Image: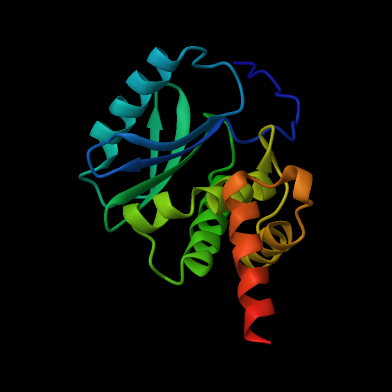
Length: 177
């Protein structure tokens, strides 16, 4: 009964998902090629949603993967790791993501508010996990870094909407003087 000794790895997160209350994808980021095609990813997401949307637990083992999840109003948040991954580490990522979004959305974590602030979600996930490696588990730090990125983006890296909004604000303040 020799059990293989697994090499320790920093790559703990396989995917971060956010689904709506119908099981449709709002956000998905896969960090390895366990599910290489979009079709396979969507099938996995439907399966995961069907297994978890009616339960009150926080963890599931599904298709050889450890899934930790949380639901709130009309959203389901999932963090997925391998079957031998530490559930507490995955739960720390999930809680950090949820708490960061809760602060950024002013406690209004629901589908509409999330869709209106997708850029904040993208930045928050990138601050928490990069390439499957957990970078941050403190929601205060994540919110602080996301706020800094939003304010200090150079003009060449801003979207057209951001540039127009910035120009409107500058014109408004110059007229009010």
